[in-house]
Structures are given as structure tokens and as C-alpha cells.
Amino acid sequence: VQLQASGGGLVQAGDSLRLSCAASGRTFSYTGGWFRQAPGKEREFVSAIRSSGSSIYYADSVKGRFTISRDNAKNTVYLQMNNLKPEDTAVYYCAGKNGRIITSELGRAGAYDYWGQGTLVTVSS
Image (cartoon, one colour):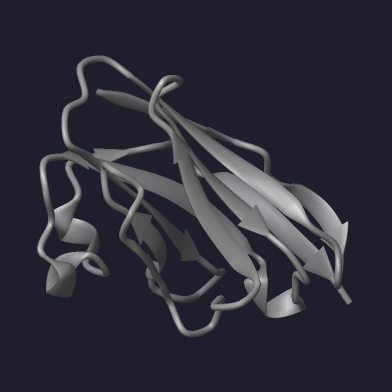
């Protein structure tokens, strides 16, 4: 499975962006996630969505502002980011795994098998 992330860019605080992560190859019971890494910081969990789309998880820092969704017909996971803040500036990586990840592991990068190349989001104040 290969993942292709897109949608990053330079925006002002309060603006919105939508990231996309398209998966190619054979996927089944696919769990999708987003992580981000700011300069000088470790990669951190942002959001995850289970294969059915019925279970969704967010980091506290993005709850109420970001929305994850998926279109299984297109094998694509989206991250709608609203009310962006300068502290959201980071390289955003999409991640995936065929199969279920237990809830307690969804925030762990090592639980995912596939990674996109990253897309840079820069939020100016």
C-alpha cells in the first residue's frame, strides 16, 4: 500500500485547509491516521478513523477544529482543518494499516504500517 498526501500550504491564522491521503494498492479493514511533526519536535498524533468511519479519535489540541473523514470508494482519508493556529504549523503525515489498531495504540506511530510523504502546513499569525 502506498499513501499520497496532499493539500498543505501557507495560510493565515483562522483559515482552513483540507488534507487528503489517497491509498493505492490492496486495502482491507483499513485504519487511517494523521500525525504531524513541528520543527524541533517529535511526531505527534492528530487524528484517526476506523475502516467503517464510525469511530473517530482526535488529539485534545485539535478537537473541535479538525475533522477526519474517509471515502472508501476512493480509498482516501481527509483531514479538514478549521480555525488554524500558528502552533498547527508542521509537516503532516498520513498513516495507515490494514486491519484494526486497538484504541490505546491509535496514537502510536509504530502501530501503523504505511506512511505518506508528508505535506507542509504553515500558519502565519
